[in-house]
Length: 189
Image (tube, rainbow, N blue to C red):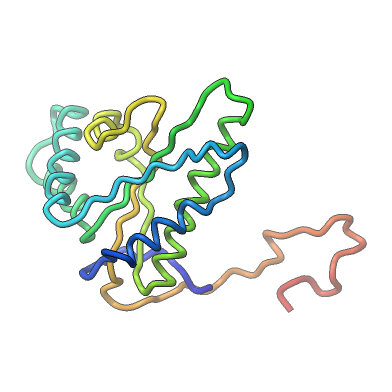
């Protein structure tokens, strides 16, 4: 697979049945206990301006010293693509399914979304940072405890087409056990 994050995203973004297929693919992530922790919020069209306004207000509340150009950058970052899919999860504490498994299911769902976007001819980039650290943003888009915001997928069509970076060699990242059963010459040959 040649999927890679795409940061320069333009119209079109997926809509209609294509978007429904992509979102459904996100729900095929591993889900121990069938907790279905995934919560996606799709922001599109004029909603992107509303999202940018929310991001600017949250930034200004976090940092009352922020002015002009700094807040303009926050707005521009929130408007970096024609669509956003907010990645949230309903994570249950003190459940027999550990929180880490619930969070990993949400992350696997987000990766499924990115792979499905690529398969449908679109691109995306997964951003965290202030979006996930600021409870005002999570609340502003409707996440309520025990729901949490884990990231924002900015979605659209890669402006300059798909450019996958060189794939790293496998050997630094993969080990076989027991070592004496490892393939001769490693995996990268």
